[in-house]
Length: 188
Image (cartoon, rainbow, N blue to C red; front, side, top):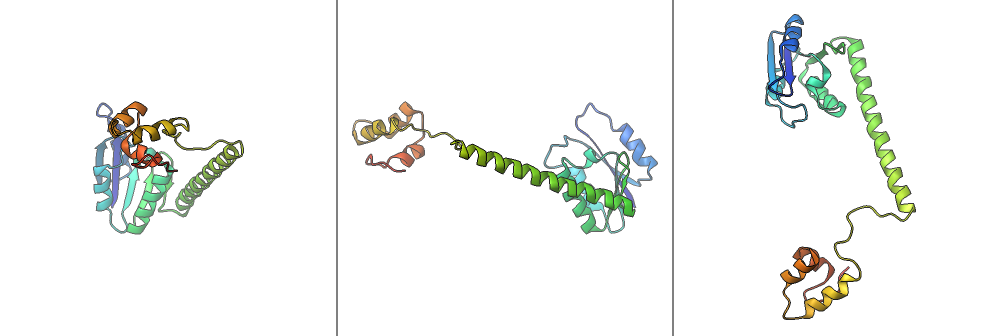
């Protein structure tokens, strides 16, 4: 059975173009959804995937109607493969019922993996270069070195509360205790 999935991002958009194309492609059942592609959960898509059986074919108008990213597409394609279902994207001409379609999709998957690896390498190289220039990543310290002796002195003063110290320096009590102990001794 050919099962269609159509999605638009907002209620103002119309599904007509996609529905016509899916019907022309011979879809016997079509799941319609009006939800952003960025949404983590798409209930109609989940229903559609759950309905697929071995030998069925999922048909979409365009790839971006099905997956949020290339990584997401590859993951969903693996799920389809596990179910024994094929995939057709009408606009891109991908049809995994054919050897050429399977090859095309595997090339997309390989390119996605290659791009992820390149991105990771660029990030690591950038972090290394920054470290070599003396830059340290992460959040800046909540207290400066010159603040710590003041905090230590205030912690030893019985007339000053922890909440007063925290308010004065704009920090929380757990942050305060990361720098100094309850008796004013320095930590770190």
